Length: 215
Image 1: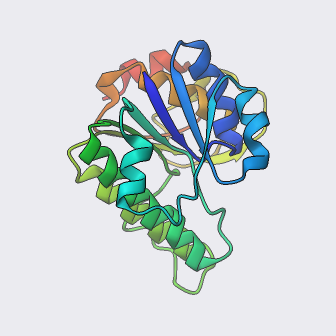
Image 2: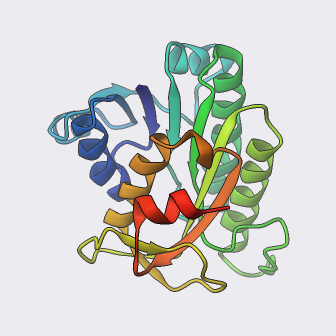
């Protein structure tokens, strides 16, 4: 597949890009900072420099035209609520609408464990803007005609990836970023994961087997 990976210099993205390239996919990794081109391209991806906060509809269409899949791994990283909303809500939704317009039908969203419109985070909490932005973007994706999969990893770590996860957990724990990268690669190989919100921790079941068993 020809994949647009939005947020191409993020920790998860830098782990996913070599997996996708090694699987034979063409990865166009979208980054904002041209100084990151060399690091991104060392993974086997092709760097595309674009500011997703300022792209208009035509710019998004140009970015995603000809792609078979979109992986959203971008995030404002919390902190500034205005930028969080601009990236995690506005830009995310703009990418979904563009993907639908240009026929990039497969869309994988990296969200978080517990993401929901009923997130319950008070407005007084710093996390509120992120929780609200992600929940609304996820809902927009789930209401679209795209072949979407939403990934809900729990607390992210830099542990060595085990290649095994727990998709049945009722509560979030932790998961290695390397395992999230492997899940991204695995769901792109599995059309049957479309239409699913997959929340997971590190666990005991091999990723491919866990995804194949997901209902």
